[in-house]
Amino acid sequence: MAEKGKKKIPRQAMPEQDPKVRAHNFDEVPYGYDEKLAQLEAQRCLQCKKPKCVEGCPVEVEIPQFIKFIVEGDFAAAARQLKNKNSLPAVCGRVCPQESQCEQTCILGKKGEPVAIGRLERFAADYERNNNLVTIPEVEAPTGKRVAVVGSGPASLTLAGDLIKKGHEVIIYEALHTPGGVLIYGIPEFRLPKAIVAAEVDYLQKMGVKIETDVVVGKTTTIDELLEDHDAVFLGVGAGLPLFLNLPGENLCGVYSANEYLTRSNLMKAYKFPEYDTPIALGKNVAVIGAGNVAMDAARTALRLGADTVKIVYRRSRAEMPARAEEIHHAEEEGVQFELLTNPVRFIGNEEGWVTGMECIRMELGEPDESGRRRPIPIEGSNFTMECDTVIVALGTRANPLIPSTTPDLKLNKWGYIEADPETGATSKEGVYAGGDIVTGSATVILAMGAGRKAANAIHEYIMGNA
Image (cartoon, rainbow, N blue to C red):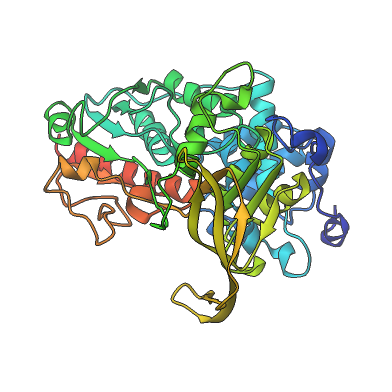
């Protein structure tokens, strides 16, 4: 098809569940492309000689090549092409912010809408899995080297896949009973089904990656003990320490961190209620403080667990909301309400110690602060009370101090994150590398994967240099 004809094809929308139906179930919201839609969308790709989209991808997926396979109808080849650089294409196709990465640099986006790279990635990975076409790549001859990987989130899984291919023995140590890290405990079923993550983990295990669950490094064992029988250690433990507001009444029953709320729902199968009677707050009037992706996940989860009203409470305006536009759109469609330019002042409880409301104050926007967003300023005398029986605080996370507290020679920055070379992941402790949210703070899945890839290359050089 001529370039002019490609530009005339509109970007293909993904079919998805009706909002009124999906607000009451945990099934995945978008259905994904079928073969016809995928090929039509793939035909929009101009196959640029110098593809800017590849530069926008943290793991440098060869995007035009995998899209070309879709145009040709060789969908399994498209998936294999993706996996040359991306160990988790079915995950990335669902949760990565392509709109601010690969799609942002697509030439078609200059005058119209970019190619739906993420949706095509999801299609190819799903096609391969659903049609039993997954092939396990050959790994190099054993090197006799062992690498311990702490945590099993996206940075760790990427690193494990890269190192196992090079012939090293890789053992992942996961604190929880299910591998997958934030992909499992942090992202709801309706956005990333657990079966998708399990399939990606299974792929790595078939390549030879070993996984030991219920191992809390810092308690069960230490970094120094791991170094005794491993040639290198990678720390991909994420940033799992929740932030709170430190307001009066925050210790009332019914006030949760988003971490706890989503972990209970995801790992304890509240998404299968009432089949699983998970101990989780089934609030009727729920307030979620914050406006990032995690806040949207918590709000939409509360709705599915039977809440009558769910409100996002955010101190800035819609323009400053950090969540993906798609997540905000889906939340609105499902009935989540938005209380913008609003900030909590204190939490109100009853005699039994349960939260019953939240005193808030209206805000207005002043000059931009260090984040580049306009600073919210309280409007004097605008206080009001919002009724709620459940509050979910979704303000971000910090680094858990458990590993540093048992590894004193591991250098941290002033926020408590591990200091690591951005190009290699090397830390202050020889043989120990780190990447993902434990280094950068909360970021995206694909950025964590990029860090895992760089650390894998550095660890390979390090352990082979010691041969």
